[in-house]
Image (cartoon, rainbow, N blue to C red; front, side, top):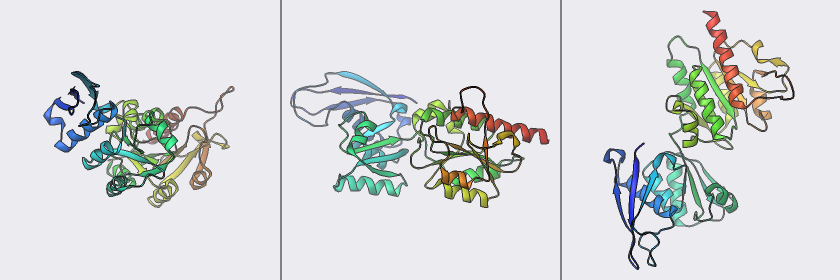
Length: 313
């Protein structure tokens, strides 16, 4: 991703003058450029056209666009939506109601971007600042796929049987990135994650996946239990991993189309998810450690599935 360099010069009682040096092929439209300029100005505390003493004097600021995980402020978020840049979700402070916020909500809904209304203290933590104007957007490294996209990927794969990973609330983006990388290496056809209470497809996830996110469809679903039922209708068996299960993961036949369900880092599988599984298995360990990191467990079970399928040939 090329870097965008902004040269900002401000004199007393005069507006900010912004100039750019850029690779013109990077920008799809002038609207994208305005969005990036607005984001930088808000992050540095400079408001375009604001009078007052100089705060920046011929200072060269370089921003790597791939690292912009969070966008704060009404103007920056609205410009991102209008430029149709990938956004994972938008958080709005409860009680914040005005025309500009309503415009953001309507734009987000048209683009099927989740909007959450949260306490202002939660937005402060999310933005690592109180200067967010009650609006914070989490940028996405790529747009999410749909469950239909994942199923289509499995159906189009030649001489391959469907293998799909489902995650029940994995919240650590590094774990999600590692799982995506492992799933791609194991030949899985996609990953399914819930829309809420889970890590999104942020740049942190993309970096942790070491590029795998660009090659494997990751679907975001509103209701994971409903998505599991749709997979069953499509002919998939569902295997959930739970440390309390009596059956060991190697006792399951992974040769038919299968979806493997992994729980969150802290709680494991939710009860509703557990009940939707056709089989629930455990991954035995020795010593005081009772469970593995979810990304490690994913690799162990996926490659057991691959071992069984290769042995069948």
